[in-house]
Length: 148
Ligand SMILES: [Zn+2]
Image (cartoon, rainbow, N blue to C red; front, side, top):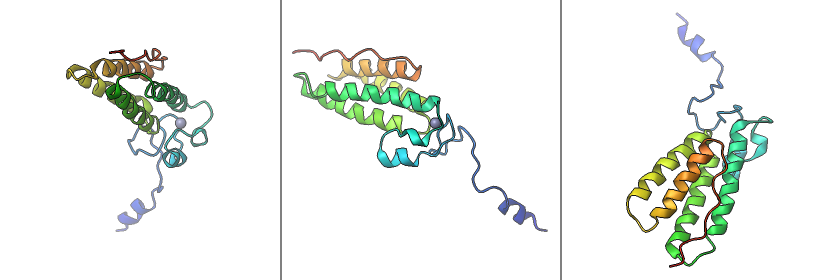
């Protein structure tokens, strides 16, 4: 029997959208190696008009807002929390399934907002922003931090 050879002859690379492989865009099937390399979404990895890429760009716009907010305000703990969140959202924007990654972040911020930590209000803001981003909406602008 030569059954084994049949398996070997199967195409080496199967493009299955949403197979969780991690390196292929779930929107257009593009390989995300430039994205992974650059640590931010790269347009050349995607087909023109890819939904996932435009979502990733939207996330990165919010990351810019987060970074700006992280340099202002008197509350150091909040600034550090915003910095960390900017990194987390950047990572999410570089995944093969941006919406799923952002949805997971929304759940995490929801938990953190309920833990009664000093950054609870910020976590809640981030949760709402991630929920909006996951639905393709623009998140609310980041309010200046509490002045206490
Ligand atoms: Zn894509």
